[in-house]
Image (cartoon, rainbow, N blue to C red):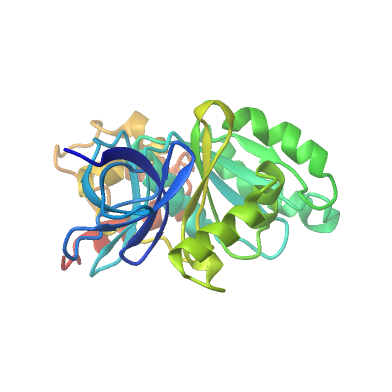
Length: 297
């Protein structure tokens, strides 16, 4: 096929995408009204003009991270290997968002880490650490940094974790995620302006997901700050396996089709009662089960 090239999607806004083709930025669109393309996707393009192309197909994905509500799914990123959840000593962070993000990562087969930013706010530090113990006890690594007060330490801590990885940073607004990205990607502000101009998104630079290339094939994706992370697309089986603390008890229930909600002689419920599984995590599991039964798409 003449004019056929391969690139990586580095930004998406509506049906408009920006692909990186060997360092060249190409504006591209999908055929028809399809929008099932994610940042991080490797795509096969057909050039339609000097700097524009049409997406003909998508290469097979290694992983896919998406969030969904009752009515539709929203692709966040493709081909990720590592997910970083950024929280901070202030403002307060939501355990619901952290747990949902961890569940999404587990279901997609993506390695998950936590970053505690703003450690210079010492009056809130101990409380934040205490709240995060429930996740470190499950085996999720925690990295403490202060992008503002000690940027060199933040870079030295996080850069080795990005090497050889396709990473995404997610978190609520106000956690300092953009400050960390700017430290790790020195030209991030320039790149955002270039991407915004190419996608014609103007001042709405924070509303789209974008990928920055690091050295040696590594990359980092910055996602918009969001307060909710819907997981309506996960099935019952996917959900029970995505809560890593359930693993020792799965298969130990009296009933083979146990949903771990109210069933008698349920090994998971017994572990909750014994304090081996955090009650709020099990409550979220029940909530996610309910959500997955409400799907309309």
